[in-house]
Length: 535
Image (cartoon, rainbow, N blue to C red; front, side, top):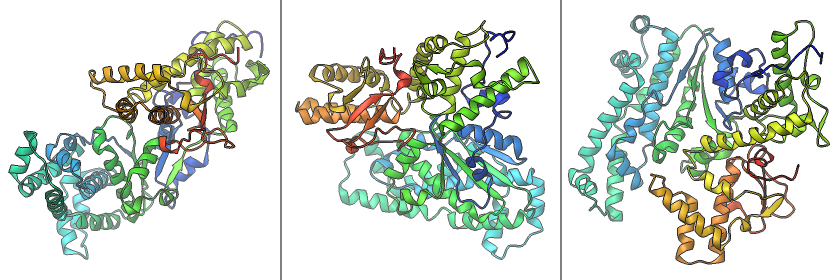
């Protein structure tokens, strides 16, 4: 690199979050088959999964930039919290009632109205088109005309209206005496009564006009006569706190099932963005016959990054940065400003090994390196290792924040990894002293409103009878969380390879971990956890 080029303070190759990275994202977008797949109307792949920071949002930002008719449904704006606040739905969920029909009706109603608004743009145009069209089905024609105004109502108002009407029927059907007893804490239903109440709930679902709603989709397809007008509906942010976790996964499952039905509309594609571990949990916990994981292989795009793709991403961003700041005649890439090796390791490999193989991490690391090297004309190996310390600390804080909702006790589990250099047996994560300390910390968290997670439940079981097996169960549970969140890689059995959540399965259940399993802390966290095999 030319000696007259100085790395200025604040010089970055973009922002780790796609929402804040529009200056670099669109100019330096790395083309993958994933983008072509989401564009393809003939492709059945509608679920885009990956870790936070893997590029799901970036795909949709590019989609909105390149396509004219793209509309996004934010679950928080749709106000599914009306379901959260329903004591009757909460009660019936507890006793085993299934609200799949209601949840699918809500999603279909929301998505269909979004399609109508995006295609027709105004209520007048839609109603004029509707008036000039005659359906082969009188009931569908009546349904569309009776509900034409409702397609233009805000999603939260519509969901509240449907949910309130459904609740009213439930209360009438279940009986006020049961609800009063439940509210006072005196309710204990026997098996026969539970079955009867659940059966009544199921009958009410038949009153939802979901059959007519399905037929209305076909009718809307006929009304959308301009096949060159392609509509993309994006549903994102499903991993945020948009609804209580007790019904969250049922609602996501209902969304997946609902999206299939919109294949009837030829010039519309529905795209759902979901974190890989959430997709895995929905599939593993589902009791529906239609939710087998193998069936979803053909409907899912899992975003994964190779080292070559990550290098391409970095190379494009570095060139774009210096092209704008310094010269328009010479391309400047990674090898022009970075040293060849760091501690006898190829420099790019040294960097990428300290990420979870996702754009967010590698952008953050290189930005930190650039900050440390400001004022210089090139980057030294020492600049990289010095930056690693601050980068590692920030990534640790980011992981805790990223998983705070799903795993509020993650920080306690991460503390068990401090100074654990090399490979360790999972059953040695805790001993008799540390498990007591962990139990005290978990109990203290309950006063702050934390829920009892699976690890805490296993600890309570251990407290009742302090056996070695029950202590190991706690270790397995902690390891499963640390694996899922990207803190450790695990070798499940002797002879296996080490597996990580970003290269292999996103979730490893505690029950899948054997007594001979070993783990290693991911290099990204070494410096933050005082693990220094590379120093």
